[in-house]
Amino acid sequence: AQRVTQPEKLLSVFKGAPVELKCNYSYSGSPELFWYVQYSRQRLQLLLRHISRESIKGFTADLNKGETSFHLKKPFAQEEDSAMYYCALRRGSGNTGKLIFGQGTTLQVKP
Amino acid sequence: EADIYQTPRYLVIGTGKKITLECSQTMGHDKMYWYQQDPGMELHLIHYSYGVNSTEKGDLSSESTVSRIRTEHFPLTLESARPSHTSQYLCASSDLAGGYTGELFFGEGSRLTVL
Image (tube, rainbow over all chains, first blue to last red):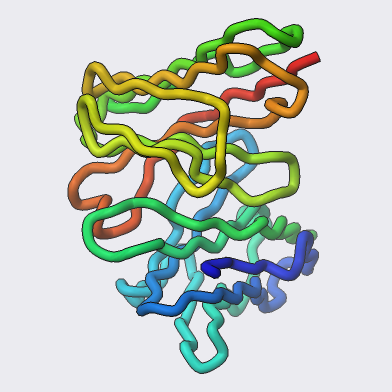
């Protein structure tokens, strides 16, 4: 079964500390993975996708097929990073935006 | 301004009532989606539309129905609301590129409470 698991509901760190938001997936095909973010009083929006291998707002995520993981990392957390983060898996292939989401992790960055 | 709009934002209604959640986008997107999210839980795809007159059910079984008569409009209807329908409903859209990139644009959501 296709599934995305985010084991931590809440991750609390101090400003300047490293951050790692965990995401594991189960999928039999070639996965496409994404991180979405929802800041307070804002809409859910795309943060980054593994296929782009990009760094957005200092965040990076590497797809590890051996461990079926796609953890989101940032070396030095900022208070403005406090938000809800969702890991998502694209189901199927080709031109579709159908995504399977994890339960989300709330990141709280304390001053 | 290109955007995706959902109304109402909040709705409290009694059991047995018919409700329609509106979703409109001015982004010119072909694909639209409805996701359902219970508090602290995953978003689940309940409806998907490729374009006008093309809809299909998502992963999570839902008693709601949708229609896509116009490109910009994708309403969701519950004929007879029940307390089990209490949830947040998120509408999203994507263009052709978004279908490949996985980028969905979300509305602000409609929080439904059925008493």
